[in-house]
Structure formats: C-alpha cells, structure tokens
Image 1 (tube, rainbow, N blue to C red):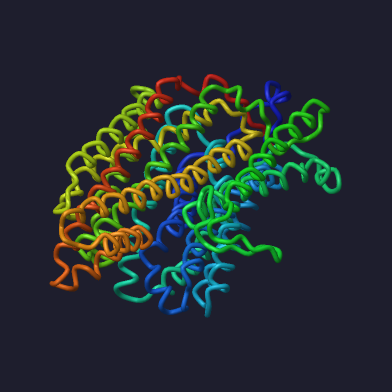
Image 2 (image 1 turned 90 degrees about the vertical axis):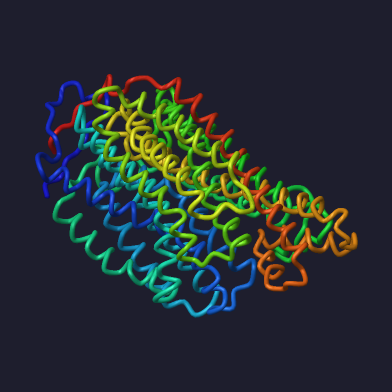
Amino acid sequence: MPETTLTSPSTAASAPAAPPAGGRRRWLVVALLSLGVSLIIVDATIVGVLMPQMAVALGLTTSDAEWVTSVYALVFAALLIPFGRAGDLLGRRRMFVLGVAVFTGASLLAALAQDGSGLIGARALQGVGASMIMPAALSTLNTLFTGRDRHIAFGIWGSMLSGMAALGPLLGGALATGGGWRWAFGVNLPLGAALIAGALALMPETRAATARGRALLRQIDWLGGALSALGLGALVCGVIEGQTYGWWTATEPFRFAGADWPVGGPSPVPIVLTLGAVLLVALVLVERARAAAGRPVLLDLTLFRIPNFRHGNLASALINVGELGLLFVLPLFLLGVHGTSPIQISLAILPLALGAFLSGGMAGRLAARRGAHRVVRIGMALEVGAVLALALTLSPTTSGLGLAPWMLLYGIGLGLTSAQLTNVSLADVPPAQSGQASGTQSTARQVGAALGIALIGTVFATSLGHTMARELEGTGVPAERAAVLAHDLRQSAGTAARDLHDDPARAVEAAAADTALAAAARDGALVTAAILAGGLLLSLRLRPGGARRPEESAA
C-alpha cells in the first residue's frame, strides 16, 4: 500500500487533500480495525468467567488470580499514550501490525503457561500489544473518514467496541463449559495471523510529517513517555489493589523491597496513588515546559482546549466505569443466588451485546440526520434509565431472564453512545495529532474500567457484609457466627453463598445471603446509574464536531 504522510496543522492549509484510501477498500479497513480492537476488548473481559478453571489448573493463589485479571488493564492503560504518539511518528499501520504480533505471541505464551507467574507475565505482554493496537486503529479511522461516512464508520466501530466487551463473558462461558480455558488464548493465533495479513494488504500507512533517522529519535519525548507510563501505572495499580490491601489501613500483609506492611498498619495503597498523582503532575509540568520551548511533546495539552475532546474524554471514562462495574457485579449476583453455570451467566449478558450491535448499526444513520452529539445524549439517557430500572426491580428471585430486558435497553444506549462519542471527541482533532488524541481517549476508557471495577466492587462488597449482618439479627444465629458469615460473604464477593445453599440445615443463612446479594447488586446498580448520569450531564455540553479538519497530503 502507498504511504500517506499527514502534514502538521501549520502546513495543512496549503496542501492538497488526498484521502489515504477510497471506495470499498476504506470499509474493508473499518472491518479490519474493528476486528483488531474486538480481539483486545474480548481478552479484557473473558478471564472473569474462566478464572475458576485457571485457578484449579495452575494452582493460583488469590493474589495470582487478581493479577491475572488486573495486570492486562494496568499495562494497557499505562502505555496507550506513549504508543499513540509512537504511531504518529513511526506510522500507524506499522504500529498496528507490531501490536497484533506482540498480542498474538503473548496469547501463545498464555495458552502454554504452566504456573501463575507465567500466565501473569503473558497477560502483561498482551497489555503491551493491546496498547499498540488501540490508538493505531482509532487514529487511522479518524484520518480516513469525514462527513456522512465518518458517522457510519464510527457507528460500526462503537457497536463492535461495546458489543464485544459484553460478548467476552459469553465466549468465556462457552469455552469454560466446552474446550477449556487454554482455548480462550489459543484461538487468538489464527485471528492474529489473519489480522496481520489483512493490515498489510488493505491498511494505508498514515503518520504525522516527521524527520527520519536520528532526527526522528530527537522528536520522541522520552521523559514524557516514562512519566506517563509510570504515573498511570501507579494510579491504576493503586485503584485495583485498594480493595485487596485496604484504602487506608492494611487488610492484607504486603512485602516490597524487603519492607513488610503488617495488617492493621498504614496501607501501601495511598502511597502508590500519591506517587501516581505526583508523576502525572510532573508529566503536565514537563509537557508545558517542552511545548513552551518548541520541543516535541508526548501529550499536546492544547488538545484539551478543544471542548468536545475535553468533555468527551471525561464522558468516556464515566461510561466505562458504568459498563465494567455492571459486568463485574451482575455475574456475582447470579452465581451467588442461583448457582448459575458459566454459560448461563454469559447468556444473561448476551442482550447487552445484541443491543449494542443493533444500535451501533443505526447510530451512523441517526447521527447523519440528527447530529452525533444528539445521538450520544440519547444513548446516555437510555443507559441511565436502564440501569436505574434494573436497580429498582432487582430482587433475590431475579434470574438472568429477568435481567434481560434492562440489559437489552442498556446495550442499545451503550451502542449509540460508544459509537458517536468517539466520533464527536475526535472530530476537531488535527489528523497529525490523532495518535496522541486516540491514545488519550483510550487511556480514559481503561482508567474508567479500572475505576469502575474498584468502585462498584467496593460498594458491592461493603453492602454484602452490612446487609448479611443485619439480616441475621433476630434469626437465632449467634452473633459471633453471624459476624463470620458476613465476613466470609464479603471476602468471597458473594460466592460463599453457594456453600450455604448446599446444606439444607442452613436455609435461614442461605436466605439471608440471597437478600444480601440482591441488596448489594442494587446498591452497585444505583451507584452505576449515578455515575452514568454524570456522563449524561457532560454530554449536554457536546457540540457538533468536524468544523475544522486539517487536510491530508500525499507523501
């Protein structure tokens, strides 16, 4: 494929427009990019359903299991902005192909892992590949389309993004029930090979106009990249581990660099979060100083002067807080109350995916007629209404089928919002800065995902313990026994309820656990609705995008 070099904003005005790809091939590229991102989104959500099998097969400890789940999001979020900028400089197709290769190789290592350390390392390497793929794909999409076609392209993108996030647990359940957990990673090998071949055949090379060789190396902001990766890594790590080690007081023993953090003493989590905040403040100061000196920067802070980009990033983070938090809580509720098998849990989530796929296809046409910013508002309103209705109707007798109508409505809203929020957020971003902007937005999503699991998970666990203790009052269960049961239910995220259901003599305790699980799921859903309502308010500040689009020039 011919290479297309994008000019800087200062020279764009004098450059003739030359679309990097045209006709039918552009839509094949959309399908290719959407499949590539679907691959990494599925692997972000699939391990939750597979975890019981992996824990038994590899002898994972509780800490191992947590890191298998969290290290992917941690590395993913930490490296998105640096790799987004690298794609701008070195070429986005090149970065996409390299990312798919790294991700595929890491998937092979995960499928062959023989212990917890090997699986955790492979998941971290998957995160590296994913952080290359996401901004390269999104910035390429941002440079290929304008006008009406742009709405349709981002509609396809958004429906795939939100739909595949929900399909991850479904695929995980099918594999856990049938072939085994290793297939969840093994199937990535042929998919990765097909994506690499498709990218080399169809995807145009786009990048910002840069120098070559040593001059190119001088355009890379190495210090900014280090501060971004370390700062976001520390922030996400602290958020993820807060539930495990305690937010202020240490609830689990922790050892680092020869120093012990005893239970009951200060938690290491605030220190990690403070370190992350300090590093991110340092990043802002360094980037301002480099920009003032006319030196290349990793993150162009002037991007945040674009209102839609600023508001869209905040809304993206809030949407992912809601989506990932909800997908974390509802399977735990179904498992604890009904003993639902992995495939049945997955089917309960299926309406969300169906709704997202269906509405994503409509979002482009609707945006072309009514405006992408209005489509985002409609989607956010549907999300808030669906989650609020779910919270108000959820009870100990609610099954996966009972959740289906609200999950379908939520999925429709999510598909509309995810498709066009990305469109609106990036519409006014100069193509030469697409990698930076795409990496920033993807980072906002991943940080939102980590925050969602941590925040909604904390609400769920806290409500479990308090409600269980309250429900056992006056039932004849001794106070010491009630305290132990409440602690066990909270620490197990509700899964200890199955042990109570298995013993007919403990029917009173089992009923109390069911009530506690329903109350905790309701509380988690109410908090989710409140967070999504904040996103709805932000969407009211979005305006029609695309008023300015720096032109592209042929290399």
